Image (cartoon, rainbow, N blue to C red; front, side, top):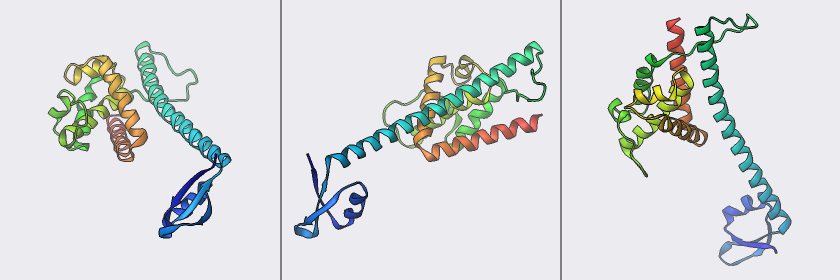
Length: 205
């Protein structure tokens, strides 16, 4: 079955790019456009492929975060056990412990222009705007950065932010990853904060 559409003049070029073809002129300066079943199927395949690529990209970002955590944990274990790197050439940068968590809180609060007390406060549920909404974004960023940029356990991260449990920390970190996958501003702020934390580590060496 062929799909038809009455297109405004400014829509014609976009629809032609999507596989529609002009049939005839209609009243009001509009153009009757038609889309064949074959073109519709092709558009559907493109949309499905785009969705699959986006899902793969998000999964990749999540896996990179989990790998960073595991590398930090391995580095800490090596240090505790006195085990040198097997190859003797690759230096594993040790991630900091709980002492850096207040610094992460300070950075996320400043990045989203909210007091640290609001980040520590219980999360507001549902659509939240204004300072409460920014505090929620900062809190999720704290969970993610603390998980990826420290060797702390989820329990340690949660205790440092008002006694939250490990499940809350894990859920918040995943929320931050999802937000970063679709929000350019959020992703840019996270990147800036990661860079600052790494500069902090370099200064302490």
